[in-house]
Image (cartoon, rainbow, N blue to C red; front, side, top):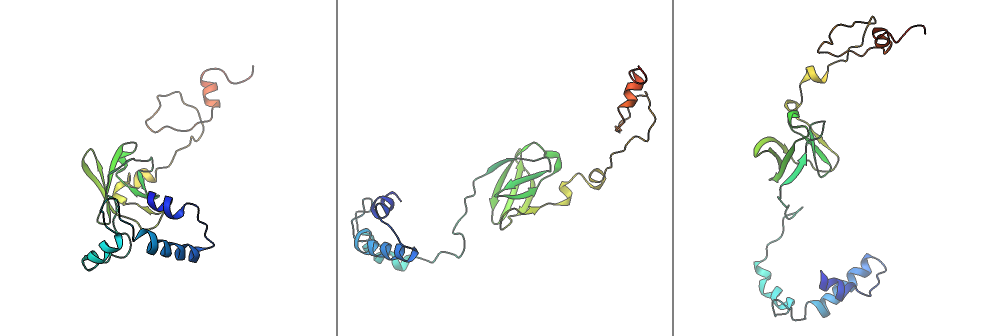
Length: 179
């Protein structure tokens, strides 16, 4: 790239893509392909002629994809973001780091070395893939907040916390009423 930037792009102007391609083809034919390469010590055009029959066409689409692990922290909605797409993992991992590996069109999520989720990699961007078994279940998802029906009690607070009018506390501590 450095050679290309310094020897072809430097100081040139292009009217459009067609002009760019024409100048590039001319430069390659008269300069780049006929010079002796610093590493191979031969002209690229000669080396290409020798290796042409051994070359195979690249597959369509992406030639390769880096399979380096990514570390992500599980969000409060038990989703992990990879390339703007979001994938579910078990909700018990909220706030925990997971390692994401991309292999053969799938994403594997691991927590402390243990495989916790596998999803097909989504094409495109800003998509969502949620497996129902990763969520807290319908009872927790559909839980309703109970509001007080009035009245004020000074009994011990039950496990299900109710939302009460603050006047109850003023009455309980003798702060309310006429002053």
